[in-house]
Length: 257
Ligand code: PEP
Image (cartoon, rainbow, N blue to C red; front, side, top):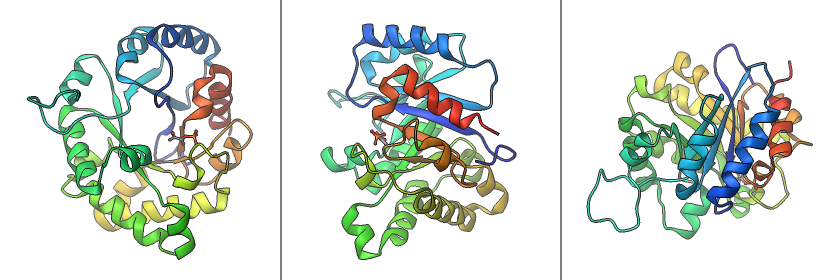
């Protein structure tokens, strides 16, 4: 983390878990645990149907609410999809874009990710853009090339003044939901490379202000070590974000000196 230049953001990704009633209960429990000091930002990304309960539950707290996806068109005949304006109207602030599960199971590509990033930014949302390699790609030695391609494609056409609102999450696919975490050095190496890629596109001043998270089995035990690296500015957390006490332990880890 480097709090001097950029925000530390701990974000939960609930995936397809919890009902609206469970969301309400989670918010009550989590708010009661929130520390008084404000160093890191906390974001909870929840399923679409849970968004109203989450926004209500976290009103007047410093937890922001995010969606897990959106559609890139403004409106129209796209049955089952959700637009950026619908999210903004609910007071949603963040949206995860290009999570590996969406790339893997729902056919998202670098092209649709780029369209969604533009749609989110134009609507005033902050995109959390996910990038990451599979185990096969890591073993083939193409991680950095792949990450550069994903970052550059996601940000194609994004103007410098909108970069302030973009968050990048480095999520090695082999570490998501598997209990296998990248070592701090592995994660830091790729996060530094992502910052260097952004520097090559936007210059040093903008690059040093971008929040770059690590995601992949982050938990209360490994969070402090991962977050101790200069270029890891927070976490995108799946499994451990479903339990208020575990998520709060990670927030505490991000609040260390
Ligand atoms: C994720 O969903 O982005 C994630 C990192 O999940 P987990 O923490 O469960 O590996």
